Image (cartoon, rainbow, N blue to C red):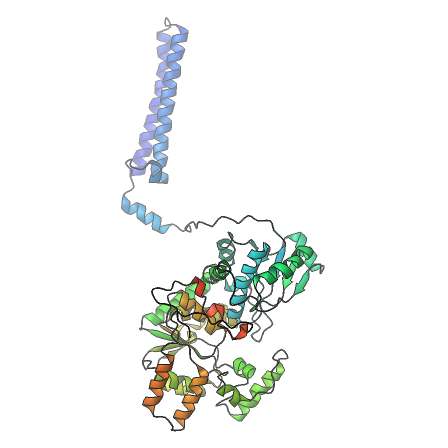
Length: 508
């Protein structure tokens, strides 16, 4: 009704204007004795006023129809309820303010091929963005590993939000989805340089040895990128950029993030939950040569698999010796004893962040008997929910990563890349509890308990006391000069980027 009234009002007004203009012509004939110049001036003024008034009225109408912001404070037919409802129904995305582009002289183009699993590649991407920024080169969106054990065909855009990756970091480095056509042709013709960079290098290595190669060849392809930047002795701004890429630049795709939110919601509705990264999977056992608790047929199967992959260099492995040195993932049985000894509530939900457990339900029985509320993404979701990421191990790992970040407690049973990267991310989120199990200590204690050399009370109290300082609280990263592999991993404890609350750093 309001719009129709306004329409009739404007139409009547317009007819009056036309009528007035017509009457002015009649009046002109009646008053022909008035001088022409004076009458012309009066006519110009009258027409101008009428036209201006007509325009103003129409603008007011448009203002009411297309949004009250045009004339704030003026009366409107829309009430506040209608306006808020209209705003809620809009499908337009909120405009994101992007950082200004960094302007610099481009020294060339850097292509990188990441190797390993999701979190190994994640850390490598952070390193390569940082390297590209400090060499003043353009980075091409990294290529992910498709030839590893998992044979995952996922591209960068299938796991990470590629547009966010490019735009959120544009004030630091220029990132392109692909090479410009002219340079792409050069690469197709083999006119570029390819090499693996030296592991655990500092920025001077990239400035003095890698940058000249970029300038010479215009396009450089680094074909292995894991652990290519040092843990320590790097400028603070370098370390902070690595964190910015990791914690802000790398977002999973909206589809993966939405599924992660659903899983967390389902878990939260039933109370607190613990994420257990139970790395007791066939590939890990075959690679590490750990077969404790396996039957002879399983041991033989794991050995065959180890020999089937030529890039797994270690072939003859003493499983028990490795276990005693703390180099094997805890078995499900060992994990059940450890969690019970730590005082984890029997009824807590335990989300298994892992692939298929080797030995299946037979090996999981000890854990499920001790903790009956063991769940997986496959048991919480409909089968169709996982269709888009089925047979894509990195996308499945991304889902587990999101759930692990949100858990009340995170417990990894092996010191792998996911364990370390999630630990560092949870530190960044406010030092959320992450129990860092000492496997060498635990297997010795577990053997003594199972052999009857320790009572349960002594076993449990010893496990608790030893791990009381291994809960993800603030501490300094361990530095061992000239032995970078034995240092604390940067991504497990990015101390330069952490708000340390009021707790002092400790050295452990």
